[in-house]
Image 1 (cartoon, rainbow, N blue to C red):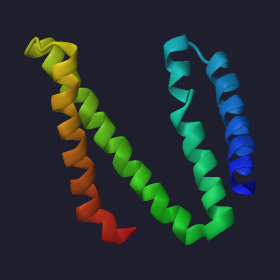
Image 2: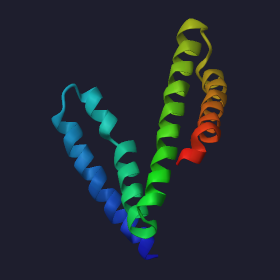
Image 3: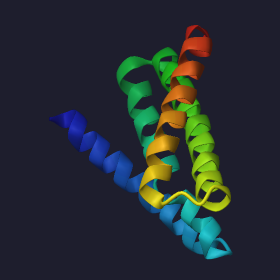
Image 4: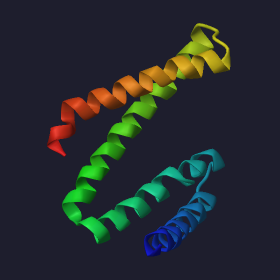
Length: 115
């Protein structure tokens, strides 16, 4: 139970700090990048360091980077499917989800031992 309270407090504080930074940045669309994912990742990593140590948090940070790279590939795939091939939104996101899974698991399989 205390872990959930700690996650709530740490996550809330970090999200609030990133939200303030996002409001200060121009253009507002750039500030939105700081909204959720970086703050949640930092909260998760800080809790991982406290509970499991730096080695565990380092391994977890690598998997976060793999997920981010896979998300970038997913986003590029969705854009191409929507704009170039004129897919509807739902089929484009379903097809691109397969791309995300393939990239994420390929990175984990290829570099997972390094973490």
